[in-house]
Image (cartoon, rainbow, N blue to C red; front, side, top):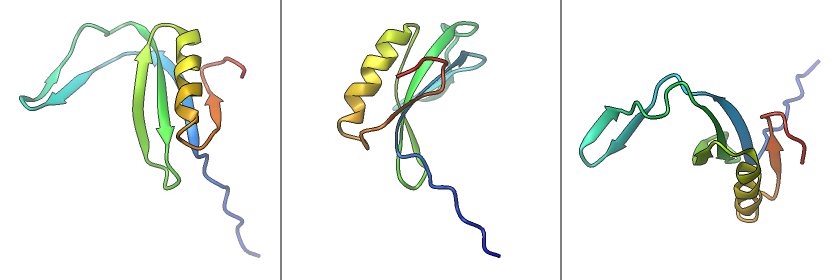
Length: 88
């Protein structure tokens, strides 16, 4: 009996969580950022068909996360999945 693969989600996903560590990488290298540690943030990621995630937005407002996700969905697969507890 063969295994039927579960199809990968392709589209935009909203997640949320408490920031435990943060870094930034730019022309000067990678360094720690302490400003958001302990804060609850929502994250909006684009998920490509190969499973690659691209972080596109983060912030403290769920309504804004939903707005950003819906705007991104126009260009990235048309689907939005809200894993932060909201319903779309």
